[in-house]
Image 1 (cartoon, rainbow, N blue to C red):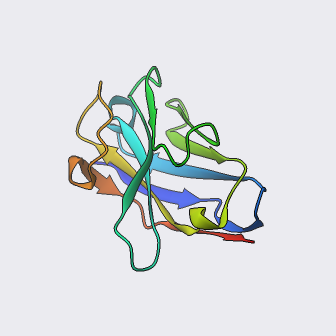
Image 2: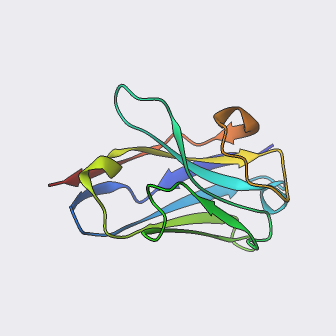
Length: 125
């Protein structure tokens, strides 16, 4: 079992940067593919970025490619999301999640077993 807690959200102007962290507890973090998702008001939760257990493979939504970077430190049980060149449309609650897979990064919400409580990111224009 994995417990997840996001931090680092906040208010930033368009073009700015934010760095999110996700602290994990539990022995399975280092063997799980991890993902970041986001959910804006009135919209479905959507995949943002994901990373395999070793960090060797990453995957991004087209909307954030070349602006966001996902990484992980298994020794610290922590997942990260560096967000640059932020846009107002990036405004959402951001969630980290752990998948029951190791070598692949799924994009479907249903493929992730554990979720954090979310952190709000607001980008002003």
